[in-house]
Image 1: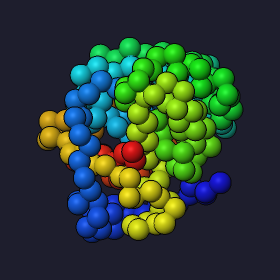
Image 2 (image 1 turned 135 degrees about the vertical axis):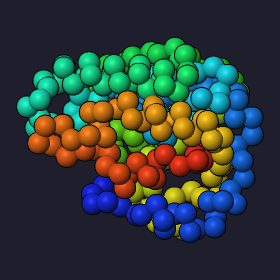
Image 3 (image 1 turned 30 degrees about the horizontal axis):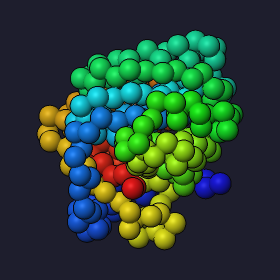
Length: 234
């Protein structure tokens, strides 16, 4: 598994890479989507702008993110799970997205990939767009969700689009481990990019220190995830 540590690849490095600006656009970004999120905030960080553009969103929330701060004394795990659910609701409201939310309640850090497949498949149909974290994203929960979504799409004939989150942290421009050849770009109008930034700010438990624990999403991470465009692999 890839180690996610430090501040990662600086956003200025990504901005200087001409390939990102030349990626082909995702056709019909307004198409309805089913988005699968391993933890509260992944769907907004990865594709919040695309969710705002889509004409219909169904969110499958796999875990409640209760293990994000395993040593914190500020909240118990059930309390942190409740906080993160509330943050998701506030973030979707900030985006202006009235999503139908299916909460699965799998343990954070221990996703049952086999059990997840039919739970995703039951809401898909042939040709539907399913957004899920990329199978190579470097976080075990993200990768398990990506694999489960790929199996569900193969079973139902839905189209899988995978969104990177931590990839921007550990990889570098041209990294051969990343499927850049299948990457598609979603440009965000200014009002959509602003709504995404407002939505990300609603995840206070992640973007701010929690007691003595540092922020999970400090400014260098957020700069990579609140651009005026998004990237999906498909």
